[in-house]
Image 1 (cartoon, helix red, strand yellow):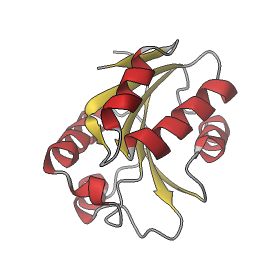
Image 2 (cartoon, rainbow, N blue to C red):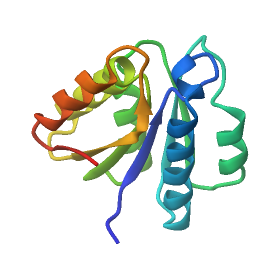
Image 3 (tube, rainbow, N blue to C red):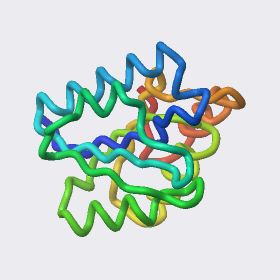
Image 4 (cartoon, rainbow, N blue to C red):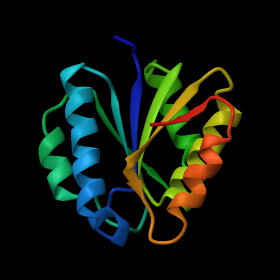
Length: 150
């Protein structure tokens, strides 16, 4: 089993994209798999946009490897990398999902790539969504070094 950290970006009720049933179902599946494998999970919340979806909170309730952080801009890489370093979480393999693919997910992953040059990123396409340019962001990720879209 490969050690990884699962980063879930902006699955807050405030964002319309977080209500996409297919995306929400895929995010929950990823969270359940990470919990089964005792992998750390980071929930990233955009300040001022409310809390993570209640169904995700219920799923992660009492999970000891859950971390919740807030960011104040689209790029949450500073907060994520600080937490990963500070808590000594696995940093070689980072799985990413959430909304909005073309903005918050994209900006955070690209920022993390600059801060954590040795890391490999796995973007789970079915667990990401955006009402704007989801496909464009996914295509950009496909052409980015150390990023794999699955």
